[in-house]
Amino acid sequence: MGYQSEAQLENELVKQLQNQGYEAVHLKDYNDVLANFRAQLNKFNESKLLGKPLTDQEFKRVLVEIEGKSIYESAKILRDKLLIEREDDNYVYLELMNTRNWEDNLFQVTTQTTMVGKYENRYDVTILINGLPIVQIELKRRGLDFKEAFNQIQRYRRHSFQGLYHFLQIFVISNGVDTKYFSNSDYDIQFGFTFFWSDEENNLITDLHEFTKTFLQPNHLAKMISRYMVINDTDKALMVMRPYQVYAVEALVKRANETNKNGYI
Image (cartoon, rainbow, N blue to C red):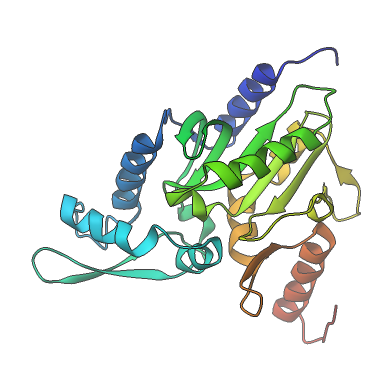
């Protein structure tokens, strides 16, 4: 394939994600991100809210519970339930993500959201689950060293990721040809802790289109977040498994569920 600009890569990625079941939304700034989160939170918890969307005051209570936390703390909140007092003095348990029935979550994608922190930054592609930014994808034009995308994410982490962006779990970097993923952290992230995805036969999947087709398929992505990320309570760190670790755990679970045999990794 010949020259392909970053904008072309982005457009093709978003189109593919839409074909895979993501809703494309335009969130130009953090106010839009908050408004979208509120709408998605109401929709995702509709049965628990008994059809009564959160009031302004109730939504403020949600934000008090979840904003301003570390990435480690946010990862734990994502997988837990929020107890919120309603204005009628009743209480409701809200879920931020369904970590069991992955297809029940709401998947969206947005591009070019502008965030203002120490500097103004505009993010390439953000995947949201139930309105929360969960995966950040940074692209470089085809043929350019994709480590530049890694360095760009490092700048974003220092300068502008805040609020709901502390819920980011996974970063993806790609130049179309080479694609890697890695977990978010409160600590410095080394390039050596970025990973290629692969299939069960350990064949690397580096092309962005194929990576999106497999790793970013909605149910698989939700499963990665729910089952194959490790919240290290000792170091207060968030980690994501490498492909061979994922497949080893899946094989172990399958053997445990389908046979009477033992298994080990």
